[in-house]
Length: 115
Image (cartoon, rainbow, N blue to C red):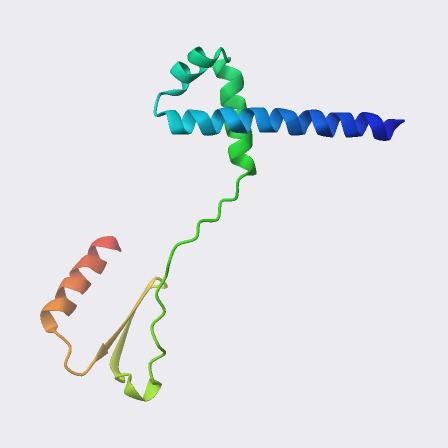
């Protein structure tokens, strides 16, 4: 007997979720603010806000973004660092032959302002 009650509750939740998912989606597409949408649909703003948050919490926080993958560089082609500057535990700068002194000076000034 308890199984039937649980099934009814699950079905009821499913219907509520669908109902509010439909309204939240329609509101997002409407381009009007939440209060106006609720007023036009005869919905409680507080209950709408509750369901909007509840449904948002169920959504995944994952976002997929396109990335481009560069071919791996041959380590033999990588310039060997002549100097490694370590500043605290946050910064490490490798300086190779032919570095630009103005760029290094600006980098060190910037890092000096953050420390």
